Length: 222
Image 1 (cartoon, rainbow, N blue to C red):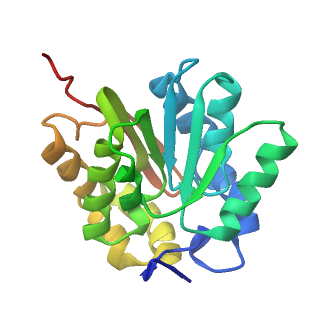
Image 2 (cartoon, helix red, strand yellow):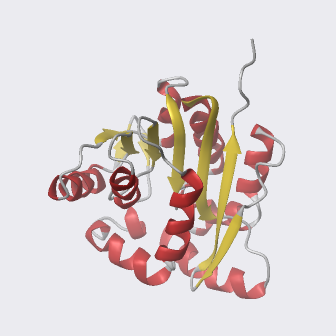
């Protein structure tokens, strides 16, 4: 599948497995632990706006909207099947969320309009150039003083974590995932703002270590 002549990795790495994504993530990644930590880190407030980059089936966007019903939440993803599932889930929950089709690099199309941007379990799936473009677009999407949040498989220190991470590499391909295991996310975040590549928290899972990062965009002072 392609959007704007770019390819994307489907949920679980194979077309047709998207309906199983929520179950697989819940079982294999200690989802409750890292997602709860991520939600508290984001701390979405009433009246704020947030874009969920690579929103997939919408679980995080829906959780955030439930916690701050008066916030504007936008879900961005290139996979129409995942977006359709997300829309159905939000509709069943009675939540108004904007679902848009696009890649991470498209997040910055509306320059500086969001208070916060988040991405979870996305950047390990994409080529290095797209990791860089996507992170830069997230930074561009938020206003000065806003924040960017990423939860993903980043550096995998130690033989055990690297061995466990091979499960993800078999699903999503080694070419794109190896850069994350070697520290690409940390480096790219530090290039955007020194210190942003230091994980605020890491969660060990049966598929490797998931790390949480936060980048605060420098405010503009008149």
